[in-house]
Image 1: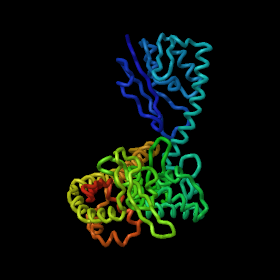
Image 2: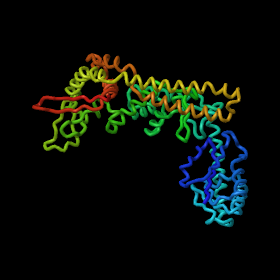
Image 3: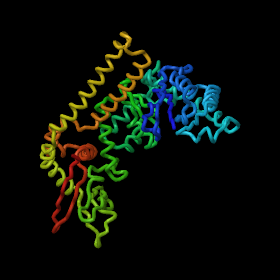
Length: 438
């Protein structure tokens, strides 16, 4: 029994199948590779060779992924199916419910071919979008607020981009998504949901990158609204806030969401107590879901704050000193070298086109893949801790630094370094353990 396989691959949309992907013991594979820029009919030279070979020595089975790989039109597909059927070759489509034994040329097959025609129309649209990606053109759809469409790229909208920039600056200053959304509505009258605000913070377009529906990103395609350093800080703040209980990211008090009772493992919330006809207020940390009987007692907020500052000043430099900075530097250097190598290859492509080693279509496809690889490496590099962590730790280990900050500013710095604060009361004596992020 002789089994052969055929595939037609458009490199813009998919990769050629591996021989193991067929799931059969295949005697020979015929492969045609379409050109990235081709918008006309493909030649399919290997398909012609397959038909020629079958005239002299017919195969028992032909494996294909989809029927549309046999031609660019329904007429071409029908003609080639007919030729193969006359030669006695049984056709099996691995990604469609089709075998030539179940679909003889007739009404059922015509219905299938009409469905293929609709799929081909969709495929041509996707090919057009893919060709636009090679030109690093923006994807179709609504332009993100703060930008407008220019000549083949996003351009800054000077009337709306200051609103987006101010939104990012407020978030970087206070680390509160809900607070930044409220700030935008109050100052500019621009009302957006918290979900929209989170999309703004993570949108690659505001960072000067173009993102496509297939999940690939190309960096440095247009003028950004925020710098790479600001983008990395935004990502750190979002990761930090995701570890906190809901709604505590925008809480006024610096310890909100960080303090946990070591006995009952429940988070402590900040409660405010006032007396009638008096302006003075008293702050306490209290567990609202304590399973103990009797419940854990409330603890004065100021006392916990003072102990936290004292512990951070004592333990933070020691925690940073224990980090393996040589290993971290090695990772950063490795990523930097990988980015540099990809950029060198990218710079060589024009010369390869001039010498005729690469044609323009293949060079564009290679350039696109290199740019997406560079973007992925840069994203990994941005997730690493800042290199000046030691100097920052030395600066914030001075008690006066913390005492000079407002509660909002202190909240920002606490969450930059602290994952959790475990607290216990032993014989009315407060004991506190600070768990750092690194």
